[in-house]
Structure formats: C-alpha cells, structure tokens
Length: 358
Image (tube, rainbow, N blue to C red; front, side, top):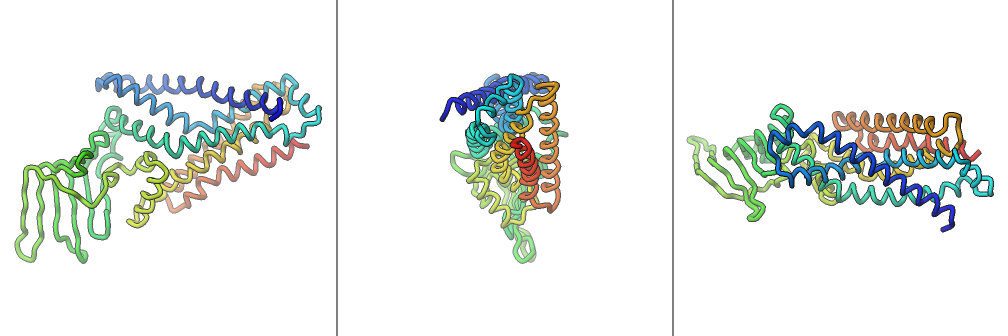
C-alpha cells in the first residue's frame, strides 16, 4: 500500500472513530437527561444503569454507523479539497478511481465491523436495552406491546399471557388451549408462569387444568405446578422486539418457525434479518457519495458540503423508515423495503462518481 493510501486510510478511520467518540457521549447525555427521572424514581441499581448505557452505546452506534461514516468522510475530504490536496493528488497523474481506493479499503473495514455488530453484538445489546426499558422505564400505558401476548404454537395449541416480564421471565394470567378437530379438549390456566432456566421447566402458580368431556368436565387444581411445555420462552416474549435480540443463526431458525405457524408478524422479523446485510452495503454506497460530493472545492467550503451531506443523510433515513413501516404493516415485500433505499442511493452514487471522474 502506497503513501497516498495510508494517508487517506488513516484520516478516514481516524475521523470516523472521532465522530463516534464525539456523538455517542452526546447521545448518552441526551438519553440520560430524558430517563434520569424514572431511573431515580425506580431506584435502579448503579450496576444495571451502567450496563444499560453500555448496551445503549452499542445499540446507538450500530443504528447510526453508516451516517457517522458518511458525515466523517465528507468532513475530512472537504478539508483535503479546501487545502487543494485533492487537486494535487489528481494533478500528479492519480485517477479518481485510484484516489477512491483507500476509501473503499476503509469502507471494507467499517462494513466488517458493522456486520459483526449486527450479527452478534447488537442483538445482545438490544436485548439488554429493551429488558431495562420494560423493567424500569416503561409505564403501564407505554408497555401495551408487552401485554396481551397471544400466540398460536402449532395446529392444536394456543397460548396467552396478559403481560410478560422479560427480565424476570414471568407471565401473568397464563392460559393454554388445546384443540382436536376444531374442538377444545382441555384448557390450562395459571395466575403466573415463570421459566426456570436452571431446570428448563415452567413453574405455575394457582394451576388449573380443565379437561372437557362429553358430559362433565374434569378439573385438576394445584397451588403450584412444575411442568414442561412444547413452546419456547420466545413464544411469550413481546413480538415488538424479539427479532432484534436474536443472533443471526437463531434469527433464521426463529423466522422459519414463525413462517410455519403463519405468524402475522413475519415481515417485521424479515426486516431485521435483511437489514443486517443491507447496512454494510450502505457503507460503501454512502462512502462513494460522500467522496464524490466533497472532493470538489466549492464556494462556501466545508459548510456547504456538510449541509448537502446532512440533507442526503436525512433523505436516506426517511426512505429507510418509510419503507420499513410499509413492509411491517402491510404485505409489501420486506426484501424490497430494505434494499430499495440502497438501490436508489446506489444509482445516485454511480451518477455522482461518473460526474466526478469527468
């Protein structure tokens, strides 16, 4: 790798990580200011608060990875352009494609980081982040997506809990209904259901099992019942965020299982899966756009380039959100929804790159 490559690559990565170090503390401060009241009100232990903000940092960084990169590339490339360094490079016989190479190497490094974060680290952080939210920060009115969880387990079994505490693994007002030939044959109910990870069993309090016969029903009542069910703990988890908390391998298995059940939320789960791949690709697209936009010295300097870059970033986020909502709440293809913004901005990147080479 030549001196030019090292020079640009170091500036690329250095500016990107400085951008992360600048904006993540700001994000943490703003978030803490919003949540500090409820944290103090609920007397949350300091250890849990620190762990929560570690999860928030990973969650926040992964979410905005491409945008941080985009703005950082515009920032330092604009400085190169203002100092006429870009003109010096190109005047020395370096083609624009050759000038772009160290940017692509840097984009590859960042894309790999984004892929590792999305596949493994971000799901774990999302799990801790959401658990803390539901345990300490959500009011009863805010936590409606954590209530009235109703799932079809297979062709014969349906389960319901009025609420589910993800952290404690406890559900309230549990029922399981079993059907044979479209007729209920028995129903299990309990005031609470708790999953014991150590013994891999469910503990039920105030357990009742009603077997429905041709004549009289048969009742089995117990103050406490330890048992095994055919459903998984994930079946009791609020569907609003379960897919975000699963590593990629487990997510694929979960989606396959939900497809077999005919889940109405399958598009939401597929959106999470496809975004794990689309985000690293967007790193390359936004890098090309950023270099093409900021490598030309303009009247107004860096401020004009940054303003233009922020506008492009806002449009990118707008497309991503609009198509994401469209896919999650309709029959619109989640694959198209995830890749459409990249396709549009990929065309824009090709157009800007063509003009920059001229």
